[in-house]
Image (cartoon, rainbow, N blue to C red):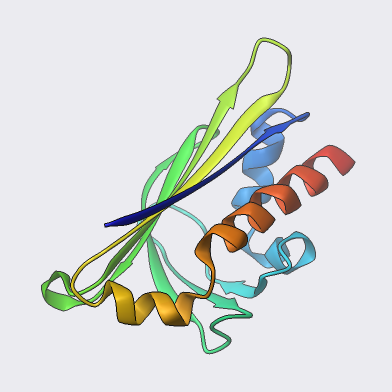
Length: 139
């Protein structure tokens, strides 16, 4: 398994950050790696993420969602040939800030082949976290 993580301390409430994370229609406004996200970001929903690395899009399922705290998006291939799990977490801090973290775990026998189409995952996660921080703090 290959794992990646990015994190930011954001000067905004978890509720404000959650509002941004669950608004599929605005991802392209703040994440310079995503063209569009189709679908509603709600429990058990199927969404399609169109990114610069994958303009044709790839489908993911929102498999776990705890409002204001965490959510998980997953995609995979049959027989466990490839699995990607993207986890978002928000932690309210005493200082009035929120600690945002995002991890991506990629596993399965086809991981090496699939990773080529994903581009540089660490750079993508870092840009996502920085874009989220910028838009949340601008509000």
